[in-house]
Amino acid sequence: MNIDVTKSIGNVEEHLIQDENAQIDIHIHSGVKSTLLIRFEEKVRKAKISIQIDEKASLLFLVLQPNINEGAHVHITHECIVSDSSEINCMSLLFNGNTTYELVSNIKGSNSTSNIDVISYANAESDQHISIKNIFNSNNGKGDINVRSIAQNKAKIKCDGDVHISSNGDGTCANLLEEILLLDKECRAKAVPMLHIYSNSVTSSHSASVTKIPEDDYFTFASRGIEEKEAKRMYAEGFLCQGICDMPKNTKELLLDQVRMNICI
Image (tube, rainbow, N blue to C red; front, side, top):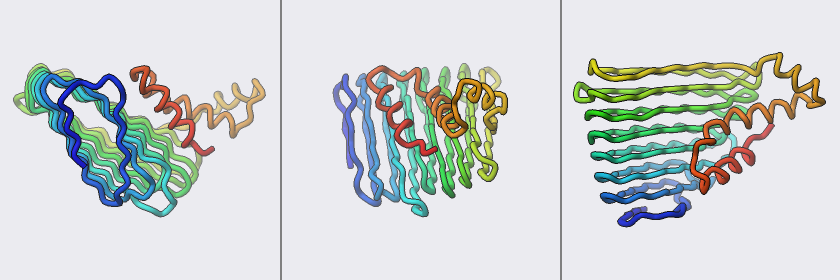
């Protein structure tokens, strides 16, 4: 599939991907502002997304991977190239199944922005591997990587985040945050944040955490007549939805609905 965006689009432009092995090439032309939504059907097993953003262009890019059958594996690779004075904001929602999601954003132009957000939920015996990389190859770039994931039952999640600032990246401001919530004793998670800094005049930070719901919070829920199962659901929904609160109004409700529909507690 080729998506060639030559003029600004005010509404969300949605594309349904049905091929088991999909190739999606996207070109955002100079000066264009666009919002694109890629929605994968359950039968998709492999997808490669390539995005080229020209000078002074802006893209809000949304990826929705639905619940898939237990035992099935989905592999999504995603590469972005960002030119001068351009911006990409990417939000990916990944639900269940054995999923490998790899995203590399290459910020080649100066004064450009790359914000990457991933929200994922793994249930049953799902195994998720999330790998996100922001590469700043020019000056005065900025961008954050934020990953929020939940593991439940016997699920496993591994998250690798990487901020790479080259020797040409003077004036860059980039941050990395990985947060994983474990809902059960048998689920497992590993968060690996990495910084590769080759310039002295940058601002950068990284943080990672793997946590459980505090017992005091269960007590608070119980004191208000809320049973443990419902408390888990409410806590999990609130945890994931924090990453959506700052999204534009025309996309926020859609994403919130997706989170609520796909959490199975």
